[in-house]
Length: 333
Image (cartoon, one colour):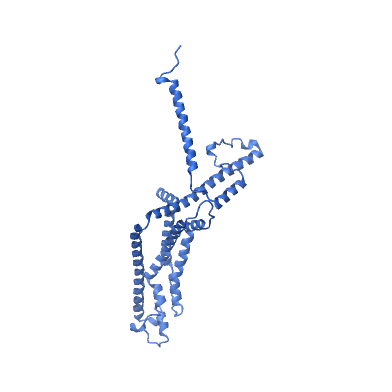
């Protein structure tokens, strides 16, 4: 239980890990969906291709859009693209970086579905059994040229009466399954080679620009998180003070023992004490996000630290003047 909690906290604190976890879950879900899917080919010349190609490509499209919806980068990318410029210029490199990561993770589950269907071969056999040249296979039922299409369309139907005591159906199925698996392994090999080439060519590009783009992409996510946390803290403190003020106005005795002294350092309202001010703050945050410069806060903290050091130094000097050489200046009577 403790390990599960640690893993959950890690995924909760790391947006990239959350996105990878969602991608892995969608991939496993796609494989599980295909294993429990009841594949029933219609065995009709006009509908085999539609059914086979539909099963092969429609679920990947659904998984692709689900991957985009559940990925947090999609919302972040749209917010960054549609937000007003304000004091901070938009960085197209960040939007491009988010879009690339979004598409890469959303494509994993659909590609896995297509590879699984090709390696299994059922969809391919159902879709392309009509396109097989019947002259390559001996033993097909002796029918007219018009009916040969219907015969080939029933290759996926094992229990059809046409193929009883006939081995030609298995031969056609093996032939089409070989093509399907060859196509699936070829696509998988191409993707592996593409990934290896991309990994090898990555050092040839400007790595510093990639680090900067990744840094500011993570910054945008952390900035939104901190803003939400600060708003939550402010709302909690604002609500607490509103409730206490309400009880004070009702009766002073009702709030005896409830009002606790609040130090200035613990005051999270930052001078925002009305609904109008809160709404203005939220509108200002959306319309014009602050500039990426925290020099003022750093200087203020530096001045506070300097004043504190000066005050402690003055105290030490006073003590040394009061006790020269470590001995007291007063005499015993």
